[in-house]
Length: 478
Image 1 (tube, rainbow, N blue to C red):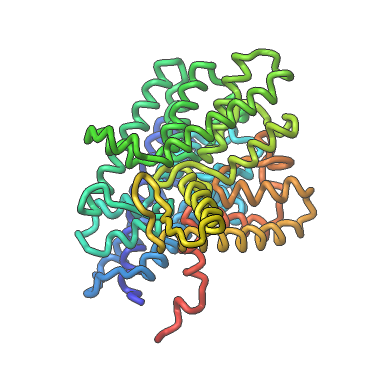
Image 2: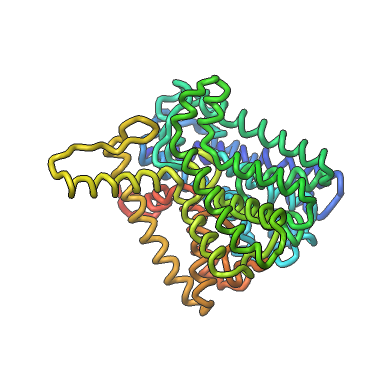
């Protein structure tokens, strides 16, 4: 284990989070609110500590797969701990566990909250809270790779942090790939901000909502989430939620004008098909209560996009819907968005691979001597990818069941306990019952909140970095 390199990378992250934390201080100065000094103090401390750690540069800069997993998991834990300090120091979230929960929820783009009155928070901390979504959406290590010295091991960091069964370089160099990803990500975020502002959304709200949409996070700045904004703004948010749920490789192909390759992207096709089918079912299920096809369609397109892309914004309390539309919402919680997007969940590509595996096995029963390979986007899927996809499902089930059993000790009803784990491990935010769009996670015990923190980080990192981090064998000298 290359401990010095692990420490060095974490020093870099401390510097980066400190510098990023200075951005909300501009808002703190403008409003001169209670969040300014805590943000400024923690940012300064993080930069100094990170600088001290980086004074000792490791001679061996190699990052193997094991180090990549450990670095990634440690970075996200440190982000959650350091990012929580301004909330604690300011007294706006005085309890350590609650502050870490809120911050981990932000960085992992989950959007689950323990706050009962979000509008009472200072503007600077509200911006920091939403900005954590944007930082975590594309990945802080992907951002770091842009500035790290070029190395053949950079992909081990990208693979450990990026969502999906496999990670491909858009261009030959990982650094160039990271730069392109953030360029596309930033441009789309700015475009959404501008459109929302033109449509009449207040500047501050447009910035925070765009950060939450880009990172598919879901922290709002109003108690009613997005319900109070105009129908035009809600439609724009819906469109961008769907766009940020698409694999960013598609946008790169669009820039390169490789239209034939875009048409071969099966995952995006099935992502849009599943989304359209779920919208139709939800719209049909709620129309009798709402009474208007136009309003039902706008509500269903928004809420399905919010849950499927794991954003978590709300324009209505779907906890009050009938069984069928609620069942659709819970189903898409597991499905999630595309691999290579900022969305969470299991990813559509995995479900496509699993479906094709089932079809292949059925074909083998009918034609025992046939030899068929699973194909995706017109290419054969390597057996290692299939194996890792199947292992991911097993690990997911173990973590989900274990978390569910621990959460059940709080004595909450079955619906609340089940969907709270579903909402956190899939990085969605709201669930059903007490954790519905109109509720929050404040009523859970301290132990349950730490379980949720683990689930949020593990879910964002596709489980294995966190499992490797807590595995005794990782730290055993050989």
